[in-house]
Image 1 (cartoon, helix red, strand yellow):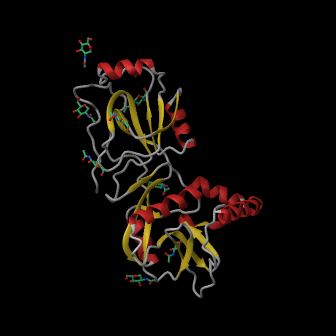
Image 2 (tube, protein in one colour):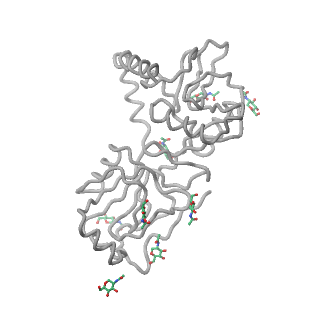
Image 3 (cartoon, helix red, strand yellow):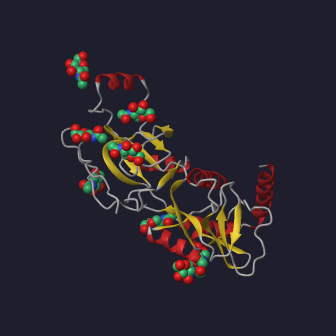
Length: 291
Ligand SMILES: *[C@@H]1O[C@H](CO)[C@@H](O)[C@H](O)[C@H]1NC(C)=O
Ligand SMILES: *[C@@H]1O[C@H](CO)[C@@H](O)[C@H](O)[C@H]1NC(C)=O
Ligand SMILES: *[C@@H]1O[C@H](CO)[C@@H](O)[C@H](O)[C@H]1NC(C)=O
Ligand SMILES: *[C@@H]1O[C@H](CO)[C@@H](O)[C@H](O)[C@H]1NC(C)=O
Ligand SMILES: *[C@@H]1O[C@H](CO)[C@@H](O)[C@H](O)[C@H]1NC(C)=O
Ligand SMILES: *[C@@H]1O[C@H](CO)[C@@H](O)[C@H](O)[C@H]1NC(C)=O
Ligand SMILES: *[C@@H]1O[C@H](CO)[C@@H](O)[C@H](O)[C@H]1NC(C)=O
Ligand SMILES: *[C@@H]1O[C@H](CO)[C@@H](O)[C@H](O)[C@H]1NC(C)=O
């Protein structure tokens, strides 16, 4: 841990002086926007921040600032929940009302924590159907799929692409910790090969690229295993180990791999969010199906 902290601070000092305008331009290129998904409903996933806001845009900005993956927003004039039972109605009257609730994970698979609430509408970064039923939420980070079918790097790369995603971006502390935890929990210690390809490879030796062709130099975080990146003959591909370090392998080597899902963008069905909430016939009956 001390070693990693040292590496982290070291690279921070070094990179803050060399990080170019180019990296900042790249940051703006990957867009992640919230889109409306459910009308007159809210998600009961963990609320990580809440605030009184004046507008939808303010709630969306607040959610981004707090690393939310979804939020519940209550527009003006929707202060009453017609679905409230007397018990919940009384208890909610005692509490102060915040019309923007930021959530650490989106609703996915079966929307099992969605609740009827005429005060709120539900917005998410993940609006299109998930490509794979094994997709998992890592709170405040995103949605991921660990594939336990071993593949070489280009096959892994293309499978992630085919589900509208990329090999998982790894260059941050929280991602590294959480994804290695996923690897540890999903693979048996007795299994010989527990390393998983992630979104980091070389096209030219020494030039590591993250998804979207971002040079690794654009990020501060490093978790190289001792002796890595080692000098191998051909440009290599990087895998995460269950203990959270990065190792360079020959790209032909068949390993597990982790995809990062991108199901952002407008949802494939339309709900009229101007319609008045109606208890008998809620305007929210759509459940996105797995494709
Ligand atoms: C919301 O979640 C909390 C805790 O996770 C649970 O106690 C509560 O019953 C849920 N409420 C609804 C309406 O599902
Ligand atoms: C709420 O309480 C009122 C009076 O106390 C009662 O008439 C009504 O049926 C109750 N509603 C529910 C949903 O329990
Ligand atoms: C929804 O999915 C969760 C997790 O896969 C499962 O535990 C739960 O039983 C499902 N709920 C319904 C209503 O199918
Ligand atoms: C919401 O209310 C409608 C109609 O009252 C009901 O059919 C539906 O099951 C409810 N949904 C949830 C998630 O409670
Ligand atoms: C390595 O990553 C880059 C950028 O993500 C990609 O264009 C390239 O195809 C990858 N190489 C292989 C062998 O998949
Ligand atoms: C990766 O595996 C596929 C399928 O087994 C094979 O066709 C391809 O040539 C391999 N690519 C590399 C770079 O080893
Ligand atoms: C995700 O997909 C959407 C729609 O295809 C695209 O606009 C966006 O740039 C993608 N974002 C990421 C992070 O891949
Ligand atoms: C909803 O209302 C807004 C503002 O009143 C309006 O600009 C928008 O066109 C309406 N959308 C629909 C689908 O009716």
